[in-house]
Length: 157
Image (cartoon, rainbow, N blue to C red; front, side, top):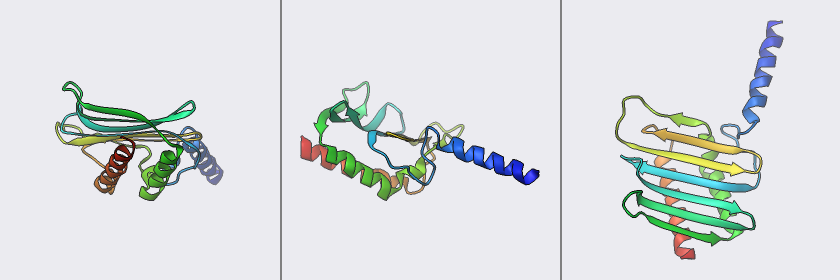
Protein backbone atom coordinates (compact mmCIF):
# COMPACT_ATOMS: atom_id res chain seq x y z
CA UNK A 1 0.00 0.00 0.00
CA UNK A 2 2.79 2.42 0.96
CA UNK A 3 4.69 1.73 -2.30
CA UNK A 4 1.57 2.47 -4.38
CA UNK A 5 1.03 5.71 -2.48
CA UNK A 6 4.62 6.84 -3.14
CA UNK A 7 4.32 5.78 -6.80
CA UNK A 8 1.11 7.80 -7.19
CA UNK A 9 2.69 10.86 -5.56
CA UNK A 10 5.77 10.54 -7.78
CA UNK A 11 3.61 10.26 -10.90
CA UNK A 12 1.54 13.29 -9.86
CA UNK A 13 4.68 15.39 -9.25
CA UNK A 14 6.09 14.34 -12.61
CA UNK A 15 2.89 15.26 -14.46
CA UNK A 16 2.57 18.61 -12.66
CA UNK A 17 6.22 19.49 -13.36
CA UNK A 18 5.66 19.15 -17.11
CA UNK A 19 2.55 21.34 -17.19
CA UNK A 20 3.23 24.98 -18.01
CA UNK A 21 6.99 24.63 -17.90
CA UNK A 22 10.02 22.76 -19.10
CA UNK A 23 11.44 20.04 -16.93
CA UNK A 24 14.58 21.30 -15.19
CA UNK A 25 17.64 19.99 -16.98
CA UNK A 26 15.76 18.99 -20.13
CA UNK A 27 13.98 21.13 -22.67
CA UNK A 28 10.93 19.96 -24.55
CA UNK A 29 11.73 21.43 -27.92
CA UNK A 30 9.11 23.44 -29.69
CA UNK A 31 9.12 26.64 -31.69
CA UNK A 32 10.73 29.56 -29.85
CA UNK A 33 8.23 32.40 -29.47
CA UNK A 34 9.81 34.79 -26.97
CA UNK A 35 13.16 35.34 -25.26
CA UNK A 36 13.93 37.97 -22.62
CA UNK A 37 17.08 38.28 -20.56
CA UNK A 38 18.16 41.16 -18.39
CA UNK A 39 21.16 41.55 -16.14
CA UNK A 40 21.52 44.37 -13.65
CA UNK A 41 24.39 45.54 -11.51
CA UNK A 42 24.09 47.09 -8.02
CA UNK A 43 20.77 48.69 -8.82
CA UNK A 44 17.78 47.24 -10.71
CA UNK A 45 17.45 50.57 -12.54
CA UNK A 46 20.71 49.93 -14.44
CA UNK A 47 20.55 46.99 -16.75
CA UNK A 48 21.25 45.36 -20.07
CA UNK A 49 18.07 43.85 -21.49
CA UNK A 50 17.63 41.76 -24.63
CA UNK A 51 14.28 40.66 -26.04
CA UNK A 52 13.40 38.65 -29.13
CA UNK A 53 9.68 38.33 -29.75
CA UNK A 54 7.70 36.63 -32.51
CA UNK A 55 4.90 39.08 -33.31
CA UNK A 56 2.43 37.87 -35.93
CA UNK A 57 4.44 37.56 -39.15
CA UNK A 58 7.67 39.17 -37.95
CA UNK A 59 10.36 38.77 -35.30
CA UNK A 60 11.34 41.85 -33.30
CA UNK A 61 14.61 42.28 -31.41
CA UNK A 62 14.92 45.00 -28.79
CA UNK A 63 17.76 46.08 -26.55
CA UNK A 64 18.01 48.47 -23.63
CA UNK A 65 21.17 49.51 -21.81
CA UNK A 66 21.61 52.03 -19.01
CA UNK A 67 19.64 53.71 -16.27
CA UNK A 68 15.91 53.85 -16.95
CA UNK A 69 15.66 57.45 -15.72
CA UNK A 70 18.77 58.76 -17.55
CA UNK A 71 18.12 58.33 -21.29
CA UNK A 72 19.08 54.67 -21.74
CA UNK A 73 20.20 53.33 -25.09
CA UNK A 74 17.24 51.63 -26.74
CA UNK A 75 17.22 49.78 -30.06
CA UNK A 76 14.48 47.82 -31.77
CA UNK A 77 14.36 46.25 -35.22
CA UNK A 78 13.01 43.31 -37.19
CA UNK A 79 15.25 40.24 -37.57
CA UNK A 80 15.06 37.05 -39.62
CA UNK A 81 13.79 33.64 -38.57
CA UNK A 82 17.41 32.43 -38.50
CA UNK A 83 17.99 34.56 -35.39
CA UNK A 84 15.45 32.43 -33.51
CA UNK A 85 17.13 29.24 -34.76
CA UNK A 86 20.54 30.54 -33.63
CA UNK A 87 19.06 31.51 -30.27
CA UNK A 88 17.50 28.05 -29.85
CA UNK A 89 20.93 26.54 -30.53
CA UNK A 90 22.51 28.89 -27.99
CA UNK A 91 19.92 27.87 -25.37
CA UNK A 92 20.71 24.19 -25.91
CA UNK A 93 24.50 24.57 -26.08
CA UNK A 94 24.69 26.76 -22.97
CA UNK A 95 22.08 24.62 -21.18
CA UNK A 96 19.96 27.65 -20.26
CA UNK A 97 17.04 25.24 -19.80
CA UNK A 98 18.79 23.95 -16.66
CA UNK A 99 18.13 27.34 -15.03
CA UNK A 100 14.37 26.76 -15.18
CA UNK A 101 12.74 27.56 -11.83
CA UNK A 102 15.97 29.08 -10.47
CA UNK A 103 14.68 31.65 -8.00
CA UNK A 104 17.20 32.90 -5.43
CA UNK A 105 16.98 36.11 -3.43
CA UNK A 106 19.16 36.10 -0.28
CA UNK A 107 17.78 38.03 2.68
CA UNK A 108 19.57 41.13 3.95
CA UNK A 109 21.62 41.62 0.75
CA UNK A 110 21.38 45.21 -0.45
CA UNK A 111 23.89 45.34 -3.27
CA UNK A 112 25.19 43.06 -5.96
CA UNK A 113 23.87 41.89 -9.28
CA UNK A 114 20.86 40.02 -10.54
CA UNK A 115 19.13 38.67 -13.60
CA UNK A 116 15.84 37.49 -15.02
CA UNK A 117 15.28 35.04 -17.87
CA UNK A 118 12.03 34.17 -19.61
CA UNK A 119 11.92 31.88 -22.63
CA UNK A 120 8.62 30.86 -24.18
CA UNK A 121 8.30 28.00 -26.62
CA UNK A 122 4.97 27.02 -28.13
CA UNK A 123 4.77 24.12 -25.65
CA UNK A 124 6.69 25.17 -22.52
CA UNK A 125 8.45 28.00 -20.69
CA UNK A 126 11.77 28.54 -18.97
CA UNK A 127 11.75 31.05 -16.11
CA UNK A 128 14.60 32.03 -13.81
CA UNK A 129 15.57 34.99 -11.69
CA UNK A 130 18.02 35.76 -8.94
CA UNK A 131 19.63 38.50 -6.98
CA UNK A 132 23.20 37.95 -5.83
CA UNK A 133 22.92 34.15 -6.21
CA UNK A 134 23.60 32.94 -9.73
CA UNK A 135 23.36 29.54 -11.42
CA UNK A 136 26.50 27.58 -12.26
CA UNK A 137 28.50 29.15 -15.12
CA UNK A 138 26.24 32.22 -15.08
CA UNK A 139 28.93 34.78 -15.83
CA UNK A 140 30.37 32.80 -18.73
CA UNK A 141 26.89 32.27 -20.23
CA UNK A 142 25.99 35.95 -19.68
CA UNK A 143 29.18 37.04 -21.44
CA UNK A 144 28.48 34.73 -24.41
CA UNK A 145 24.87 35.87 -24.56
CA UNK A 146 25.99 39.50 -24.63
CA UNK A 147 28.41 38.67 -27.48
CA UNK A 148 25.58 36.93 -29.36
CA UNK A 149 23.35 39.99 -29.13
CA UNK A 150 26.12 42.54 -29.74
CA UNK A 151 26.95 40.69 -32.97
CA UNK A 152 23.26 40.77 -33.88
CA UNK A 153 23.21 44.54 -33.33
CA UNK A 154 26.26 44.96 -35.59
CA UNK A 155 24.71 42.89 -38.36
CA UNK A 156 21.29 44.58 -38.33
CA UNK A 157 22.11 48.20 -37.51
